[in-house]
Amino acid sequence: MTRVLLVDDDVELVDMLKQYLEREGFEVTAAYNGEAGVAEAMTGIYTIAVLDVMMPRMNGVEALRRIRGKSRMPVLMLTAKGDDIDRIIGLELGADDYVPKPCTPRELVARIRAILRRTQVPDQEKISDSVLTIGALSIWSEQRRAEWSGKPLELTSTEFSLLDILARNAGHKVSKNDLSEQGLGRPLARFDRNIDVHLSSIRQKLNNLSGDRVIIQTVYRQGYMLIKE
Image (cartoon, rainbow, N blue to C red):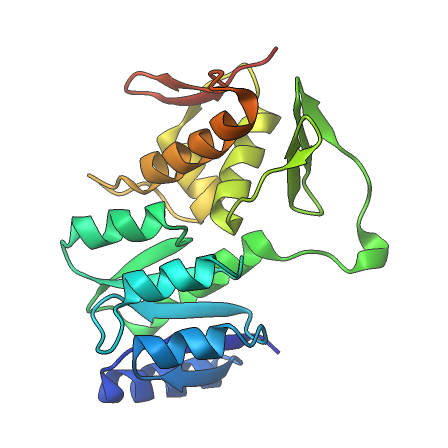
């Protein structure tokens, strides 16, 4: 059973989304402020959390910051339509994706399922030890694990998916639209900076371990490329 933590102070909206998600086969727990949401998230029993940005007693951005300090659980943010600042901050703090409000229950379910598809890890007995190595970077796709010179890369589920795509195409550019379709499960929308923000975070994490070497190159107006050593 997929356990969803739904955190939003809009009681009516939460009730509607909860009923829809449960009809779709999810087990849903609701929290109505950021503090309660963080406390629930820290139990470690949830598969994914859905966080609204604007909440009392602790907003969604601060709640995400605290969750990310302890957990790699996938997090989907609910943001006000057109509120790019909160959206970008959320992505920089490690949100896996966002949905602008108002959203339909069907869209929310589609985004949750897209995140879960790319984070699903096979049963332990089915996981292979096959590794993709590009220079000092090693990636175990099935285990969703990455290392640089033997040191673990702490990536969110979305960051891992994007790095994995670039690694499998090392030495070749990958368009932003391809990264969005393969990594996020949807075409790139106009003015969508989601991919850019995720790639910026991946670069920072790689730079912290590689001594500021350029690992991922921007191909102007086309996409990104992982440099093949």
